[in-house]
Picture 1 (cartoon, rainbow, N blue to C red):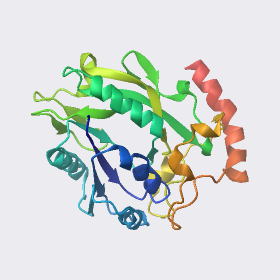
Picture 2 (cartoon, rainbow, N blue to C red):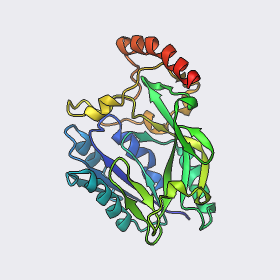
Picture 3 (cartoon, rainbow, N blue to C red):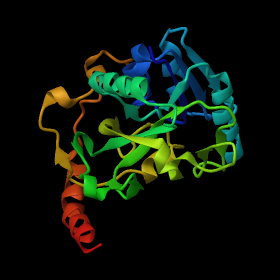
Length: 265
């Protein structure tokens, strides 16, 4: 049976980190979590998850170089054949995780990484950006795409500094550029990076990523990750809160312009 280790680096993710970690906890063998000096309740929330498979390290990242070193430390501490990147604002459905595990089970030794889609929410969890809003290109596709599962291989490591680091082979070639060694997984996880991620005033990055747009409406409640229905910690907001009137108005005004821009470009 395939075994997976998750690699997570977080900073001020109190709104979503509990749902993120809990959404994959039962499907993986180990979870390595590094906290980058969060000033909100992120570290406290992570410590609330009492599970021996979680190894938590707090406050050891002080520069972009430290991020790369942390990722390579996690590789050294990984004893499974595969590792999965998991940010504190990424939440998975159980069905998607099962399908990913099955794909990794069947992947031949020539496969180094698995690319997939992301569902990028805007305003609240009830709305998400259309695929044409994504600008990433992988395996002949364009959209909200990323590589989230990598095979641990001798001599492979992270190179470059955050946010431009890349998983590379022994000759320093980025895996994401070696399409013959990639497999596409036609599924998505929920990416909440454009929603409010923290109440901390120091979470500048979180505010900078906010997007105002009326996206596609989620059609069926069964699409939501199961973990959203679990009782989270009191210090983390409910995921079911809808965007307020002010954000809705800004989104309504901005949406026609953004849609026109996509058609022209």
